[in-house]
Length: 461
Image 1 (cartoon, helix red, strand yellow):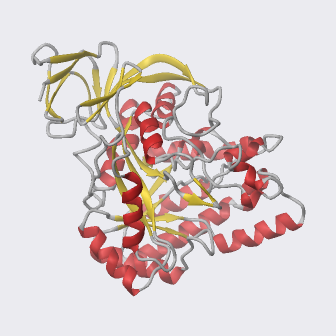
Image 2 (cartoon, rainbow, N blue to C red):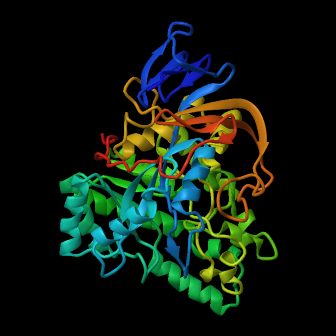
Image 3 (tube, helix red, strand yellow):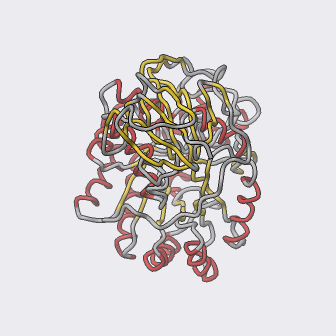
């Protein structure tokens, strides 16, 4: 194997910022040293640039079946877009259907991903049917490296678990070391509000946000926390969008509980103003949890600064406006839930650095290091240190770009951030030492990405 040297850049990790050269050998970081000390067969000039770990997006949904259709990104197109955006690892969600074994769902997702990914990938397991056999299977999956399980307090009749099922799964995870991930919304109450809104003729996309109330996110978050406390299990709440839900997480963490929260760029940069866009354009922004009024954003940013929220993932689940989002014309409840974003996360969070919301090291912490630690991938992923996989991004902090569907690489016909000007851009991306984006040219290929068995959560107190 050739030795590659990344020379002249500012190396940024969650813990340090240092001008150093990075030596790569056999797909791993071999050394970091003062500039000019190391030599190699090939040199990449990073002068004036940041050298950062590849992003870890711990919440994506490639090819997810939802609402009578499928997420429009395949594992091939979605991981290619992720690479373009500086993300070198995703953890996607395999789905157990009701009446099906966990293994059947996991095998189906392995079949979708194998040989198709441009970057490395792992799986969480969506648990839709808690029973004695499912609980036994959870133990087996943890042993083989699928160490996190998602449950839903929303979507009755599809993914929904009741409190008893949730408690049983949490009790099992307390024993086997797995981490329960929770979609915390009171789906039973929401369905009542949906039916009432439709009966009043309130069918436009903006009503999606109005019926999925922040208080019902907070109530479910509180309930999930207390169930986890009863079970003696850690809890990770996905896509936190509301100030009231952050308050519940903050209170639990102040009590010393192993409770963690994730938010997503859409909640930090978009709002109900987007859901209210005329001519059905608001359908582009329908996701669950929903976008909130803009005043919630300050509380989310504060949660990220104080570590009451630990991770920013995308919940990337794209549906084209034409032919997919349009399924909900005349009935907002039939709009497929999800936004595209896997390509935009690292850039949007760098813009947050530019805007003064977070520091550079916090950017890397919430986008790379903590997701890797939370889901058992650290220090192989999420940092730049000897022995770590050489997942490295050369990032130009001064380049300006305009986010647009015309220039993005996600397989979806709109951008949730259309026309937004950001400062900072990915220039070169290495995955295990192999260039997948080289000076803004795609040089990767489907099948390079390897499946990642994961250890258990490394972030527990």
